[in-house]
Image (tube, rainbow, N blue to C red):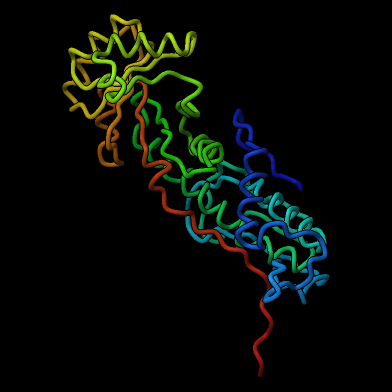
Length: 311
């Protein structure tokens, strides 16, 4: 696979995650456990792609084309899906030439990649690669819109754990492609004391103590929804305050209390219409669950030359 210059800096593509996602997607599309030379499959339950099996060995040149404006993400999935289909079905290889890079802005009609090789491989990989590109491009595109909305405020847009099961690493990569930054990856890599932890422990202080005892050395964020809780969390020495569903005035007061002691993050139902107001309160971050739980897919298609109509 050849790639254009200018690929997204400082944001390595999660290769292991794309391999797992492609494998799971092909289990759904081709049937699990399909191996090389499976044949046309179909009613005998062998799986594969019987519709395209008779076209194997025929060379095609296909173009991956944007149908809508947006920010592209996940282009390495094109080669990953093509290679995996060829290996599973024993069909011919496909050479992939990328003509765009993850993080790039695209316009309708822009060709993102060309695929040159076996027709059965290209057709077998088509839906898997389009599903991944559409999903990841949608996340990147929505993230870019939120990032543009807070430009000049000094606040960064962050994601959450509200991700598609099995696609978290890829969706968080797509957030970076859109100019956002990642919150914690999972429950394991940071402490986040939330209202339910406080409810069980009895107080912010008790919940923080329990979390620190279980995860010493991990960064600590505490969710607060009142200024009294802000004061209590700061007294516990937290590094970050999650300001949950606060109005703008209360957020400004919380930011003032935390200045020099902890960073602050706005959270709670943030939309494109409200993100700028939240960012202007002086918070360091704005958490936006919608980046990954509500992003519409980027419209991308795979075009092949069509036969001439019968005269």
